[in-house]
Image (cartoon, rainbow, N blue to C red; front, top):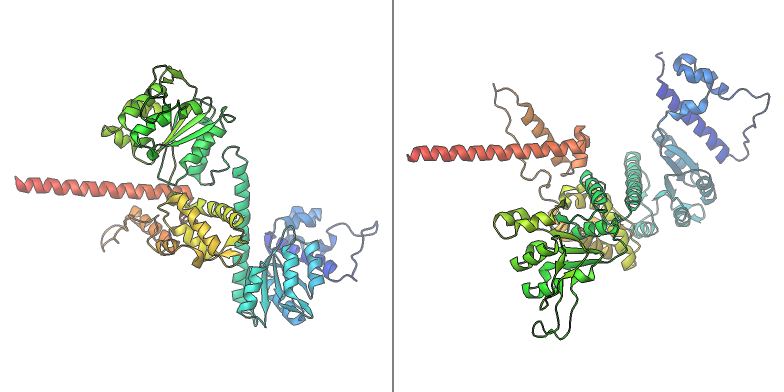
Length: 553
């Protein structure tokens, strides 16, 4: 017989140790002997079971059982609670190859296991002799580190299922059980738990970045923005933040202020598009008494209000030429201005951060925005990407909004189903984070249980998510090579990538995993494909124009 691999033997050793622990835990009358001077050396019993030629030499010589088992993959731990012995024993026999399985016949036995072991998932019957399985669910979920709970019963109906879900059960299955389906459900539940833990850990990591707690995400582009903000915040440099509406530009401005030496001073925000040209000048620079009709007293403008702190000018692209000239003077060497109707220069010490959702460089090219003011404003430029370009951040942001909305609306909603999250990741989010927040709040209000389901999401999200994924929209699928032609490696690669994205619903992270690429590499390849398509289109159009000109002459 061929020798078994070290990993296989280690896995067997792990199961052996687990069974010893179960024996101690589940048969109280059986006492494990306390080691004494006459006892065999640690690991001797194990080594007597496993020939040296089937086990790593260094471990066999040391007789170190813990070292042998440390290389084995850690299996999720499941607790099966059922008052029928043949049921719980049958389930253990069916599942123990994939999971570390404990069994208990009643509530007391289940609680003993929960006290002694870390249990990832508990599968419990609704009826435990004369006991109610619902009571066990409540006690299990009340623990500091509760397991996932799946209920099984032969008596169940829709009402029972709803009640179990309301009390925190992950799902509900009826007997007779389909083992294959049950194992799929268990794996899905454990995967969901893992994602939830990762979300919490990532959130904690974000919150440790002082001043950046409101900027949520872990994608490479957001991490780069974090680094830029931390680098520029302590300086006096002006910052221009660009990006679509709803991407979180003001949050970046607040982070710049919070991480600067001005954090204890005021952060004053002005939304430039909310004022007419006449009112905006007075809003920014203030006015003297009698400066215009209705000016019955002197008014301090936003620049003076923000003195010593930070002034955030949102939608800077909406201001007229006269206001642009005055802003340019404030950003000059003397950093001074005059109130409307006044002639006394006023000096201020203000850190200026501006933002726009318009193409400011295009406006400069068209003469709509002063180039000298643009250069003064954009000493450091930060671009906030749309949500569709950082889909891996959607689960983290969605869970944050879910928690906030549930607390504000007094709802017991704690999570969302995998199908609902998939729709959120596929939807293109034209309104970006602002639209996502509104969608989550609506879903929390409409949710009937502890989870947000697909039907709780707005119709716009449900309908929009079924459209072509944004990650492959506009990406041309190359035609197959004709017989006799050489295979084109780039076209073949592009076909594989487009197909993977399509099958993964446009989820770049999943597609990258399927293709065996890093997410960053896949993004780079997509960008190259689009640039190649654009170049090819331009070349084709140029050739057509030249041909037309030639024919015309």
